[in-house]
Every structure is written in structure tokens, then in C-alpha cells.
Length: 448
Image (cartoon, rainbow, N blue to C red; front, side):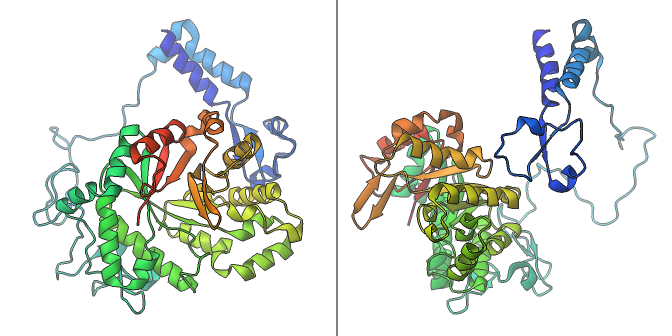
């Protein structure tokens, strides 16, 4: 009965979890006997409030109830019978569903003529949906839903629903034999989860043919089950690739729709930087950052997340280490400001948030490693930290050297990912990935 009692105690322990509530809820809890604010640190932001779901003594009572008399109450507890009707049983009466009879269940094969992963067709032959978005009567998506469809034209960035991005079995097999495919195989052997890290923005701007070829190539590479996701753009809105909000929205929409067709079930991500977040409450700083980087202000980045086009947002921390001296914001404060802002905006509800860290290459101190890697996670703002294994500069190549320090962070290993380019290995791809697996649980394989 020890295992059963342990489960009962676990139930009680779960009830002692302290919940985090919004200021609106907490407004009436100043004298609340269930408040556990005294357990939080003095530097906890004011909008974070602690509230007992069950006090420790209450949780103990729950555990004792289920564990009393050799777990008698737990043994006697049974699942609910539920409210189900067997339509095939004698005397049962179930309503008839009007319309054509449908046979089979969720595990039945697809209807004849419908390829797995393909696109459904209307009765007249037009395409009815792209990635679950409704199409108009003429087979084209609503502009309010998509702002474009799946494949861009060379001149305007608009798309057409006719393009298919799904790779054939032969293309998937061929992709596995490429250097990138062999790197995926080597990564799988180490047990790390794999992301494909690529850039589709230039292909999208180059026109439909280039874009379709790039998506099919990446889709074929990502079709393997060991690939968890695809990051399809970096420095989105920060570099000079796009000039307007409309361009960015059209690109992300087209890339997301195409990749979900080419590699269904894979998570999609983008990388960018939001300089304003590091300003904190300094209005002069925020005004200047908005002027310098108009395409990546917080609300515009959030609109991409709200649309459901990406599943992961990687926020670069590079600008935090300089650039804010005018407002007397040092690197530590800039980092703190950024992650407090991210947490306050609840972006983790819209997508997984990752911190992108390029500043740990070269010689670094143990304190710097701990601050830059663990702080975003400990602040409960980023669910993951991506570290570059090498950075090319005008002075040469800087490599990740803090391997021993990173090994000490084993409690958060699952939240650590390496960004690695297999085309320029340190020794060879297999050896490099084995070393990466000692510290990281995930790897982003950079591909062309």
C-alpha cells in the first residue's frame, strides 16, 4: 500500500501549490488569510501575487483523509459511471443524423482519392482550405484571414492556393542523404531534439519558384520524426530584408501556411529582437527605440504571435550588452527589463519564448554564464535558452568555451539548446554533436 499512500500524499501536496494571480484579482486580497505573499522575495514585481489554493495544514488533512485506515477511502473510491448510451443495446433510442451516412472511425483510412497530408477539394474542384483557414466561394482565402495564400509571386508577394509544397517519399529519402540530412541522423544518435534553422525570407522575395523549391527542400528534411520544428527566419524586422509591416505579415503568413503543408505537425519558429523591451519604464528610451526599429515594436511582434503563425519566438539578447548607456541602463538592468516586460505581456501564452544568446562565445566568467543562461529561465520569462556555439566577427571566429560551466547547469539542461552549423564543424559533425549532447537537450541545425 506504500505506493498508493504516496499517491495520496502527492494529491495533498499538489493542493499546496501557490497560484499567481493578476492585480485585478489580488485587489481584494490585501487582508486575505490565504495570501502567501510573505514567501516571495522583496524584488518580486508588484503585479505578481501569491495565493494559497490549499494551506499546508489543509493539504495535510486531505492526505490523511485518503491515507486513513490503510487507504480505505482511496480503495473505495471508484471512477464515475458517466452518462453514456449504447445505441446498439436493446431498447436504446438514439437520434438519427440527417445527411449522408459516414462509416468508419478516426482511425479509418482517408477517403478514396485523398492523399495523406494533401489538401481537401470543394465539389467544383477548387481548394477549400489552407492550413485550416476558410476559403471564399472561388477557392481563394479571405484577405482578412490570410493577407495572401501559400505561394508568393515574384512582383508583389501575393500567393496562390494552387501550389503544393508536400515532398514526395523519394524527396524525403534524398534529403536524408544530404549533409544536412546526415547531420540530422547524427543528432538523433545522441538523443537531442532537432530543429532545422533556415532562412526563407530571401526565397520568398525572389518569387514563387524559388520559394516553393526552398519550402519543399526544408519540408523534405524536416519530414523525419526526429525533427521537432523549423525556424524559418532570423532577425525578422531587424535586418533590411523587409521595409513594411505588410511585407512581414505576408511573408510570415505565406511561410507558415506553406511549411504546415510541407511538414505537418512540426513546430514553427522565428528569431528577432525587440529593442524597446530593454528600456523598461524609461519613456525617452522607448521613444528612441521605436524610432530606430519601427517594424519590431512590441505590439507588432505580438500580432504575429496572436495570429497563431508561429509556435516559438526567439528573442535575441545581443543589444542588451551596450546601446542603452544614454539612459543609464547597464547590461544587467537591460536584461532584467526585457524579461519582466515579456512576462508581463504573457507572451508565453501565445507561443514558446526562447532567449537567444550569442554573448557566451570567447572567454567568459562563471558569473556571466550563470547570469545570461539561467536568469531568463529563473525569471519565468523564457522557457528556453538558445546558445550559439560559434560567432563569426570581423576579427575572426569566437567559439563557445564555457562547456564546464554549462555542465553545472544540468538542472535546466532540458531548457538549453545549441545553435550549430554542421557545414563548418570544429572537428567533425558526429564528434561535435556528441559534445553538444553533454550540455544541451536540443540543437538547431543551421541549413542554407
